[in-house]
Length: 273
Image (cartoon, rainbow, N blue to C red; front, top):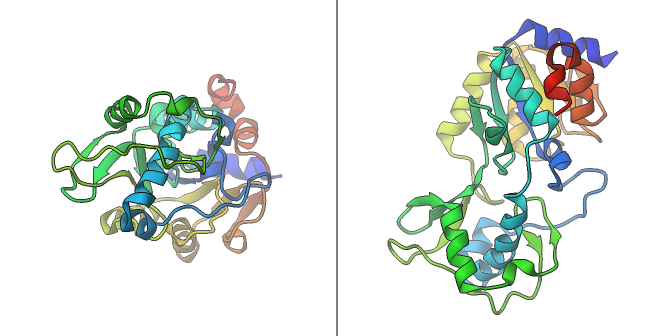
């Protein structure tokens, strides 16, 4: 019953898509709040910025995590969405994910709401540099570190407690503190980004939420805005979300299988990727 509803939304065009961590689990990246996820408390921006010890602890784990997240490939969902964009069916795509997989799948009109893990920003001079450059420097400073056994975490790091021996790299321009160019817990999404997303909601015919529990306001506010406008809201997610009461249709299933079922006649080559 849900597939015809989603198909009608997509066929009507101007669909705004909002994606969360559940879109990337098929690429091997765990999510925060899925049925099989392990509860954890991520480091806040305030904790990170406060002490060199916190920065060392973060980068020691992130250095290992990057080597694994960077190796992840876009999955069928990323490819299906890129195909829909190429067909002109989408009004835009907002992702809460920081893994960069939508872009690597070929998606062009993309808002990375929480930033991207493949960039690094200096907290002191604000210079932005590629994460690959930092990874080379960290490898030279900490040979063999990425070979440690550790469990992958959702936000690009790993679960690793013994980090006292890790050597942190600083900004090559000002010797300042480096941070991934992502929105940490305790930080706010830049106001121009939020304004652009609200504008996308205003220009869309419907909103399709994929793989997000909508537990954080950064994504939920766009669902509320869409519902206030009176446009259809569809949510595909395993488990309940904070937006369920606002949804026109809720599909409690895997994202890739639902999209493939809905779109296979038109995008079969992408669905099987």
